Image (cartoon, rainbow, N blue to C red; front, side):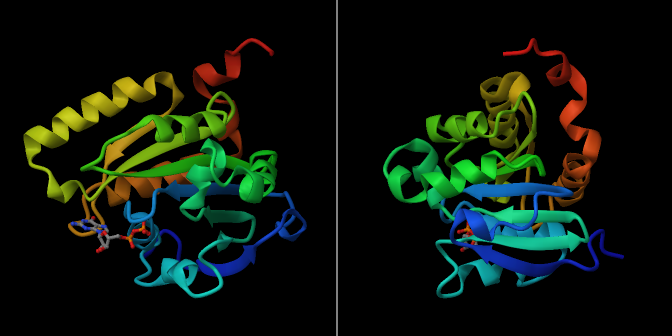
Length: 207
Ligand code: GDP
């Protein structure tokens, strides 16, 4: 039985007033275009074509919300999420991305990184955007089936070093199913209300 049997498309957000009410829990999924984000969402929710909705005309530039069950959502960030956090698309998309970041219900970020690229500066910027001191950050090293064992081990070690205490990281393949169950568990944990207040993050000194 699927962990998320009732997952369904909820709404697309083009401007801050369109966000769903800031109640419950949501986790953002972000990744460069072609990183494997849609395949990851489909594998984690065990729905073959759920994330295809985000790629339909008119929705590719929007934040697309999927309800896992009442009060629990994932929000699929288009590729520009990177640019908005970084520089280029800041003026156009900054307010939307900033509004998302201000939501109390945003409990976590899943960052999808192509295993062949590994984590780069722009990924670290997105991790920082998510305020990892108050939110769960989990990195999926996607398409790991394209690496051999030695490469996988090296990539995992290197990614852990880059992330430090800011988050957790795992290998993932939508194609062969590696890491899907671990990712599902990480998502469930990130959605939990107390996810924001566990571990060393809770004892950070006030700003
Ligand atoms: P998105 O643009 O980040 O949503 O990426 P997609 O999920 O659409 O995937 C981009 C491309 O990578 C497609 O050609 C997929 O078939 C391929 N891909 C996605 N996940 C995997 C995977 O786990 N293994 C391999 N080998 N290819 C993958």
